[in-house]
Image (tube, rainbow, N blue to C red):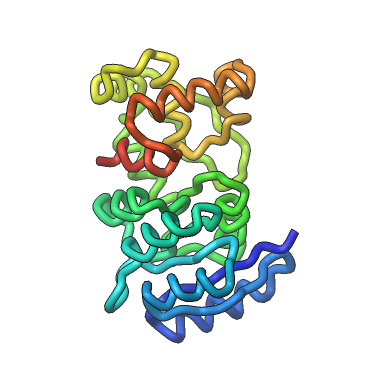
Length: 227
């Protein structure tokens, strides 16, 4: 399946480089470019991409504003942030706007392509820099963040689970386990394997966590962890 991608960045040299890089990936097709959020919104309306590769800080309509509008008008379109900034405020703002993934511009072609595939399939994905911040928020016992689409790492709940339950006292221990793995970038099958549960059971726990946190997506749940 070919994934249609819109590239959004205010710097022409960056856009050109991304278009060139992505054109070398067989299952990705660049549908267009945009230099700011307003152009991105119009391009999504016109071209219906599967994924928007979105810069954050741009003149005029910025990335988070455009992301919120795109997600609201086209919920089937996944927004993947690609930016220079990896501070907590930027990450939280992007995820609260509806971004499904977050990469810094240190990412290489393979990492960007893998992340695009992940968000196109409904997963949330974060690069190592963002993952490290999530781990710091979770506490010293947190599981290490998963590489996009990669295998689950061994779980080490402990301090992380206790920290999550302190911050979100409505969560049961098992729900805290599940939230910990969501924040580390795990898919439902990966969580099921780590916690020795069935995938439908994990899905039920995920829905319970979302309800208690007042969120609707994995990215929003991660934003709550970072808040």
